[in-house]
Each structure stands twice: as structure tokens, then as C-alpha cells.
Amino acid sequence: MSSAQQRLTQVSSHFGGNKGAAALTEKHPDDIVVTCALRSAITKGGKGGFKDTAAADLLAGVFKAVIERSGIDPKLVNDVAVGSVLPPGGGATEFRAASLVAGFPESTAVRSLNRQCSSGLQAVVDIANALKTGMIDVGIGAGVESMSSQYGPGAVTEFSDLLENHMEAANCKVPMGVLSEQMAKERNITRASQDAFAARSYQKAIEAQKAGLFNEEIVPLDVKWTDPKSGEEKTITVKADDGVRQGITAESLGKIRPAFAKDGSIHAGNASQISDGAAAVLLMKRSTAERLGQKIIGKYVAASVVGVPPLLMGVGPWKAIPVALEKAGITKDDVDIFEINEAFASQCVWCANELGIPQEKVNPKGGAIAFGHPLGCTGSRQVSTLLTELKRTNKKIGVSSMCVGTGMGMAAVWVSE
Image 1 (cartoon, helix red, strand yellow):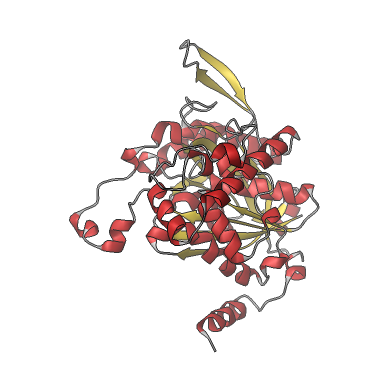
Image 2 (image 1 turned 90 degrees about the vertical axis):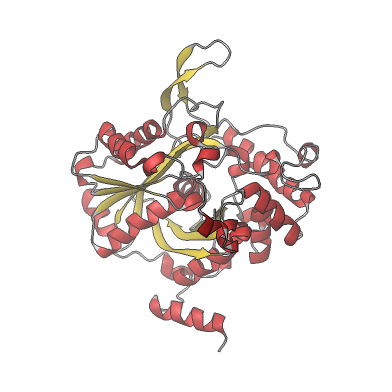
């Protein structure tokens, strides 16, 4: 038996064997379900609608919206996990304060966590696991990032000599643009394929935005905003992703100068945008939801997290997605929609191609190239985007996934109800 077969056997035996897509749609009292998943708009770092809004303020707005939309009694929420990458101290103090501002009582616990670009998904999965074990009865997995205020050189501390003198350890701090350029060259990912993918992301996003397909998942937020030209402070309502641009084509992207190498293929138009945003997912067991009269919109099934070489961090979804599918007992052909974070067009194109995923199943409303990647927010944002689109198109099974800085990948399987 090959090592791959052994791994499949171990996974299958642990999770009761491969049962197929039909088993995923069955309903059981102990299912971990989603009763609310929403997000703020995603805005351009440094110049968008949230450029003057603190991450904790974004989070407080999204928390309030979860309480209002779901109708959950805040006193019933036992724990809140928030993924975030850039804040000093992990944002733990501010996020606890944000929960109190939003209306959660002192009895609701809050913590922050950081697994780089998968932080938002890790927060949701951590809450799901706490529900499975009975540690809590109701919880929220969330993510937030203000890249306007906290993105930059200071986000990575200096390495000690011990770390610098170990080759793979030192690779952990290679800038993502540089390592993505190296990956593109090593895996023969052409600039033409990257630009075509990126252009389509913009086109899908603008089509979805015009059709109002993001409206259900986005909660409008009123924030203070300073006009950079006049210096006047205004109160504005932010209710749409402001990084989405019309008229982007592969040809127009082909004219942009490479950002990381003279002969390179990575540039601002085919990589994720620097952005601000927040998202939150309310979870509990099915039995709890039914008892509380909560409307179930989806079910969490399984997740995976894997390591890959730091210099090839972009291949993370390629390695993580099959593991999550094995745990769920399904194949890629059973999946209706894949939300794969577009950190760079290069890695997203390569992962989808290597996994044999049809392009029409990947990010049907566009992705981070078109509307941004607020680092800690993305993993939780994908849940609202995915479940909303599955419901709208009357489809059932979805996968969310992303590559992760320093060389990792994460994925999760979801079912719409």
C-alpha cells in the first residue's frame, strides 16, 4: 500500500469512511451549523472608506450586525475568536473591548489568534471545534484587519542570528511578492495566464456588484472619514467593496510593470489588494439552533491545515484541499463552489489547475485581486461569500481555502442549507 493510500485509509477510518456527498446533506443534532455569516465591505488600504477606522471599530460594527440579524441573545454567546495578523499584542485587548461595545456581556469571552492569511478561517474552525467538544454552546468566529493603519515593515520583527543562519527558517521572512515571483518561475506560470485570471476576477466582481450579489453578505457601516484633499472629516456609510474596478482586461493588465523583478510576472494588477475589513460567523450545534429558533444557513463539515516549503507558500491550497475533502468523505467533483483566496493570480491559477478544478467553480463572484485581502478577515469573509452564493444558485457543497504566509495551507468544507 502506498503512503497516500495509507493516509487515506487512516483518515477514512477515523471519520467513518468515505460516505460521499449524500451523507454531507444529512441532518444530525450534533452538526455544527452556521446561523449568521456576514461581513463589512472591503475597502482600499490607505484611501478607501475605512482608511480612518480602527480594526476594533470595524469589528464592533460587524458584531452588532450579527446580534441584530440573527436575533441571538448576546448572553448566550460563550466565546468569540477573532483572527487578525497585524495588531500589536494580537489585538486581544481591543477586540474584547469591541465585543462589549457591540452589546456582548462581560460573560462572553474573547480572544485573538494569528495564523497569517488563514486567521479568519482558523478562528471559525476553533469555535467549531470548541462546540464539538462541548466546551461552549454558542460561539462566533471572526476576522478583521486594518491594513491602512498597521501594514508595513514594522509588521515583521528582526530575526535572531539563530533563525537567520537556518536556511528554511530564514525563508520565512522572504517578502511574499518575491517568493511568489520565484514560484511562478519555478512552476512555469505565465504572465498571460495570470493576467487573464486577474482580469476575470475583476470582471466577475463588477458583474456581481452591479447585480447586487454582495448586498446580502455586506452590512453597511457608518464611519468617520477624512477627505484627503480638503482635510474635512465626514461621516460616510460604507456599503460596497471600493476596490472593484470596471474596464479591467488582460490587455490592460499586460501593460503594468512587474513589481518584484525586471523580467517578472507579478504586479499590482494580478495580486491581492491591500485592504481593510471585518467578518463574523455565528455557530452552534443544530440542536441548539433549533431550540433557540435560529435560522440555519449552512453547516461546517471538516477542515485541514498543512505545511509546505516557505518559498512555495502559494501551493498551500493544492495540498490542503485534498486533505479536507478526504476528511469530509467526498471528492473535488462533489464540490459546487471553491472559494480559493487570490493572494496572487500565479498561485491560484496553479493550485486550481493542479487540482483539476474547473475555472467556473473558482470564486464565481471574483476574489481578493478584485476586492481585496484584509489578512485576518479573509478566512471568515469567505464563509459569508460562499454560503450566500451556494444558496442563491441552489447548490450545496463548498470549499474555502487559502495559502498562508511562511508556508502553509488551510481549507474547510461547508454545506448550504
